[in-house]
Each structure stands twice: as structure tokens, then as C-alpha cells.
Length: 481
Image (cartoon, rainbow, N blue to C red; front, top):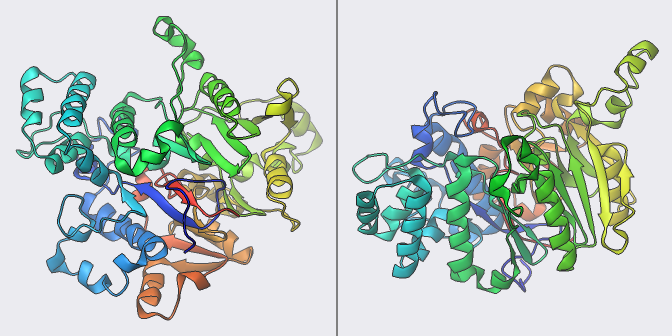
């Protein structure tokens, strides 16, 4: 591993991943009830033991093997033994893995709560947001940091009393912020269910020693002037931004989605912030339909290699131009806007003359060729192998939301069979997480030797939460490419 010069530095989507923020499924996820699932942004209730032990734990092990192998290699049998009770995966337990490469947010929260002043102000802040009584506030102050961190996240105290709602979306760490070069852009969640997440993260990044070198490089978008006077129909004027709508595709170029979760006003403010601080030279605004199917831009495309992207076929150039439609259908549907993407690219040196891209494929091709200097043919792998109805079904279960551990080596869900077929047809090797871990543990495979492969992760329960591994990661450091 090369010597790092900074704690956080991200200039691309596919360079070798060295450090990221994660949060493993906590007990709050097991308290999501059907009547509140959609209010808490879950599509369904999940089985907690399965989502942890049979699914997310594989993600933790894969990440450690790639980013911090000394903590895991040779120990798989030990950490997964029944007698170990999953203590290796539990923040707050003495046997927790405690990695400064695969960084657990709950672990960081425990540490900042050791400071009495931070504890006092954070308890007061959480109680204000959640409308707690004075008695509950005093009760919270009596808890030790480990237990208090657990309560802040799960909403439940040691007596198994729910003091406030859980924050089950905390596993989707991509949305809490995004590292852009050596800056950190914090989110402003669109939904009330994520308000406490944003609060906890602000306290962590402004107070934990790990983020000390970033302290002067944290960007918080302001609210619109007199935003509290806006009527409900003025939602577009509200400032809401989530990390799934931000992609750092090169050191000079950031994509910002305008979506169900990120407003036009937030994109507007982010463009100015990034240009005024000279962080990047180009920002492309990608406006997608405001549909629950999509949520963020990373649900419809992510990057695999410099010249390879996975995306939803209904946004392909062929589909947008209706090349398969007959002439009558093409004319009749030509002006339909509901499924169109609009793309404008702003350049710092020429703000008044943005560049327009007709299709998403045009933009991604331009990034591969001109931002990343790829002279190979730009290729697109389509969700569900672009076969109806598998394209839409598998996009719903995050076939387009893959995480690159390094260029060409990505994590995806095992339930997206047709998408895996499309990867294989594109020359990628298909590996199952359990088999790969066995090979890594035995030494028959090394992470450095892997190239052009899709690692399939168990996903029956994880996929119910509507987010893939791109969503469940907040990269802090990637190697330049």
C-alpha cells in the first residue's frame, strides 16, 4: 500500500479504495414495523440476524481483506465461530475489529462522547430534534459513551424502551457526505427520517481527531434565505442534498444529481461552493426523474473501469432516441418528458456557456475519454442485461449501484442474475463472496491479483432496504488513477 499523504483524498470513483466510512446494521433495523417502513425510507421490514450474519458480515470481511488484511487474515474461523457471538463485528465490544481503514461510524461516535462537553451538547441537540422530555434528557446523560452511542443510533435504551425512532438508513453512509479531493461536502437530507443521521455525522467530523486535518475543508451548504417562509409547493427552493447524488469522476470534475432527494437549489449552491473554493473545474448537473425507483443518480449508473459503466438501459442513447420504435411511435412519444434526463455541464472558466449533453451515455463517454484519458472503446453494461422485465426488476434491487474496490473489481448483489450475465458477457469473472473469502484465507488468491471481476454478495435482506454497496460506503481515500 502506498504511503498516504492525507487522511481523506478522493479524486475518482474507481481508484484502489484505501479508507471508507461504514455502519453495520444495528438493532434499530430490527424495529422497523410495516406501518412505519416507508416513513423511515425502507421498502420492507428485514430479518435482522440474516441481514447481519449472513449478508453484511461478508461485506465487512471483504472490505477488511482488501483494505486492512492484518485484522482478518488467518482469523476467519475464529471470528465466525459460534462461541464468538459476532463480537468482532460489534462496536463497543472489546473484540471489535477497530480499523482505521474500514471505519465504523458508531465506533467514532462512542469516542467523541468521552468528552463531557460534546456529550452534553449532543444529548441536548438530539433531544431537541426528537422532542424528548427533560427527564429523558437527564436519563441520557447518565449513560456511558458506548451505550449512549447505541441509543442515539437504535433509538432504544438498555431497558429496551424506544425513546425515539431508529435511523435504519445510517447503513447508507454514502448519503451523509462526499469526499471531493481533500474537502468534505456534508449532506442536507431531504427526509425527516434522516435528520438525526446528519446531526450525528456533523458532530463526528467536527470533533473526532481523525478528521482534524479536514476541519477547515468541510463544506456545509446554507439554507435558502428565509427558507422557513417557503410554502410546501416551494420544495425546489429548499436545500436538500444527499451523497448518492454526488460523484467525483476526476480531480477536476464532479457530477451532482437533481433527484427525489437532491434539490435544484442545493445543486446551485454546491456549484458555487466548489468553484469559489477552486476544488474542481467542472460540475455536471444530472437532472433525473423524481421517482422512488431512482432516488439518486447512483441508482441508475456507477463506474466500473475508466471505460466501463453499469447503467439502466432505459436511459441509454438507443432508448432515448427510440431507435427500436417505429416511425409513428417515435413521433407520438417524441415529446414525452417524464423519463428524460437533462444534463448541463458548468465550467468555472466559462460559467455563462454550459455544455449540454443529449444523453447520459454521451456524458459518461466524454468522462472516460476526456477526463480519464481512456483510448479504449467506452462500454456500457446494462441492468438485467437490458431484457424486460429484468432490467427494471434488477435496477430496483440495485444492479446499477456497485462499489469499486479497485478499477475493474466491484461488489454487487447476488440476486441480480441477468446483470451478472451481462458482466460475464463483457469479459468479467463472476466470484461469490464466500468462495473468494475461502480463497483469500487459504492463500490461493491474493487481492492484488484480482482484476475485471464482479464479486457477488448475499443480498436477500439487504436489497429490501433499497441501497447497494455504493450506497453503503463513504470513501475517504482512493488512489489516484
